[in-house]
View 1 (cartoon, rainbow, N blue to C red):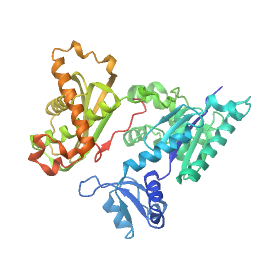
View 2: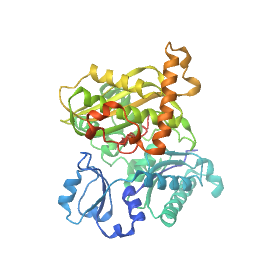
View 3: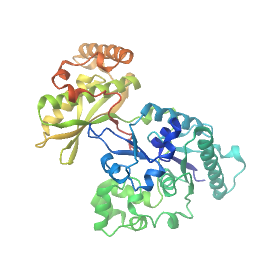
Length: 422
């Protein structure tokens, strides 16, 4: 029998949390936006009144304010959103332990093994009907207990469940089954399919593929020849074939990488400024690795130039480590190897190929004692910063450009989401 998987997606989640914290914001057009002066001033979320002003998520805050003179903008409050995310997760766990978060406000919930708690089911349609009943109950509880709304997709795989949660908003349930997916899904734009971004949409348009159904009817060998394995994967998704499972709520293996990015306060060209930015991110990534008990084998660098052209490169770390010096050295070497001719607007550093303490094999490294000494020192730095604030201990290089270095690497920058593919 098919699985029954829900995908729950918070509606205007950041804005909803802000309106719960301050009910007066319910009566005004509201956006949650980044810092305009720090040059990452984009709209992260909006309420319904702002939506009526045709404000779009992702557009510049300054552009949104031109559309609506009464617009209220508040900065993101990630601790608040994480609190609500945790409360939402507790509700999901009332129905199953198979809960896999995808960002703060989205989660897959596999209720297949819980259906027997809600009656006997002898047909797939009966299972789906119970899935819809549970989805509706979750939506009701979200509003009554937390004051936020979610849209829920119900399907037999993760891809279609997520697609369903996007189809009707706000506060709605959409069911996609084997018997109705061609009528429900195939008429949608191909860009609605998960992982079909702007680049793939343009490539598919050249093949006269504009809907998910047209993609599903393509020859998969042609797609693989043009786009490699991903072309065939997207063809499978369009045809409702997604064997991936929902991870358990406590599955540590769900963390495949840990990374952060930041928009520099000004475009950077000087080598000293580049090193400052990479140190900021490397320290943050290393600290998060230590919090989660991971070590990385690979470091990935993402660079976005001031013409908004970006590239990503990666390299093995000199040793399996959670040391910011090792992560920085690897990221900096990658940058020098692929140095940009134009000023840089954004940087991102990601630790990949993570392993636990039992697999790091640090003792095999010739400089193991030095690495271990550095890691013990960084644990001490974490303790001091957590108690007295990030500013209490800084690298000397940060004093050479206080404006660029004035970023809290644990709070002010963007956190890379966990990838569906890891």
